[in-house]
Image (cartoon, rainbow, N blue to C red; front, side):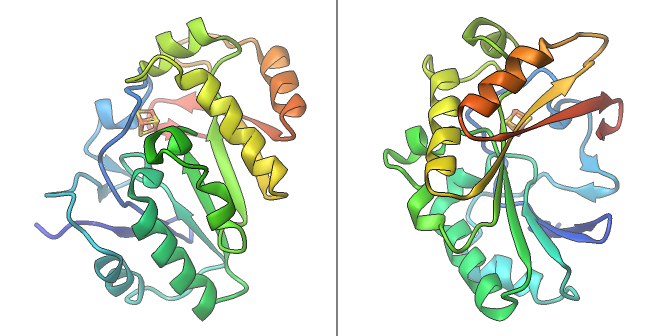
Length: 205
Ligand code: SF4
């Protein structure tokens, strides 16, 4: 079956670059489902190039917003993402581009990737997920110990670059509540907006 690298959801184009991730969140949609609203997002391989993504992208009518978000962490394919974002911005300068990310990119890529994305990415949505390292580790099950600190540092890098950044949490996962006030303050101290995503069985709000 062909890899679904690009898909349409709620009138917006989404880009699914990879199935790899440096987290293993207990609420990850990948655990329960093979698809998001009918889109099969498991890839046959991880070898897709920017050209492969662009080829699929060009089969869609342009939309006002494009979001890098799929079954994995998009910034693990940083170079591909950068090339695709540049292609979209050059072709459709008015299109808003957002990345939904776990915020581990600087650790994973061993450099601050944010300055290279300035002018290409209009908004980062970063999964803060929790008010403490302990709760983050329990919810997100990261593959390295400093993950929570990395997430906060990444958010700060985005705000330092003057790029819109939203720190998000998933609330009410199977009745579990997050300290929203503390998370909101952490987000604000890092220069980010704050968004609560209500967990629903088929995804998030
Ligand atoms: S960061 Fe996203 S893709 Fe990765 S495990 Fe968590 S919810 Fe899933």
